[in-house]
Length: 376
Image 1 (tube, rainbow, N blue to C red):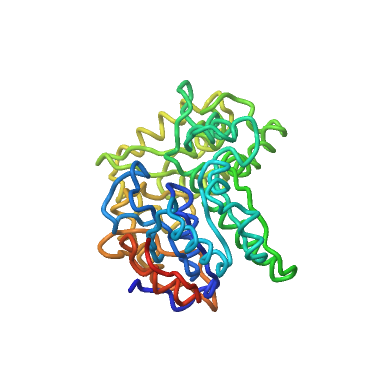
Image 2 (cartoon, rainbow, N blue to C red):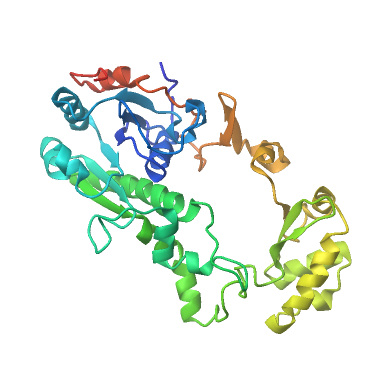
């Protein structure tokens, strides 16, 4: 039996997640982290679904239970309908129309369960000129304006992994939408459909930058502005051991702290004229190259100089700040981020490992009161 959370702010909330890739699983993970019962409906043969890896390394499925259903079979479809009749929310990330063709679209599901929150995750949204087209994170952030803004001066736009579209603009947007819809349902007693588009989610993340552009605060090309690696006091620098530090002293008072601690020329550091930024960048690069990464951190990390180490993923758990807060943990030998945020009364517990296909689903379905809890 899968280890379940004994507490968390969403304890008792029942969620059916139809297996997908990227943002859908992480959305389900965020809700499971908060204590929800997340029942993952998986295909008998996942085919080309996602990037193959050992099951224990599929961190997006931690804390869930699994039921394998071949939704092409009538009995499996009836099982899915029964589960949704007992669920509080649904997560699906198929192309528009796929769930309707299965007979599991919003009209059918809300007719059987008027309180169901029906969460839909797509790249382009349920409607629109590109709604039916395939895409990935890079396409969605390109259409939102986010990709254009990311990259070094003189270079092309740089994909920031798939963090902005899939996860920040997708998973977190849909998880927020589901939580908001559950709050509204407590007042109205009615469920509703959530149309979460990763293009729109990535666009929301750009809100303050649209405002800065309108105010004339980002007038220069990509890579030449304050927050896009243009400013030398907001960038990364290579150290003598090949490691890197992040220097983020945007405000002048923090640059003064850096100068006081290190002896770097204050007048040069306080020059905010972009014309002189290349000279400052060169001076800072030579300066940081004089010590190792950890030596710089020992000197500056306990000050307001805004200098931190650029940690590799395998290093994050050992850093004294992360270790002190238990910000990262190992589940079944896999290092991963701990559930967040923290709560004063209903703090989430240690997450369970990802289930094997079919593991724990029947027991969870039975606890919901369904009549057909077995894999089919």
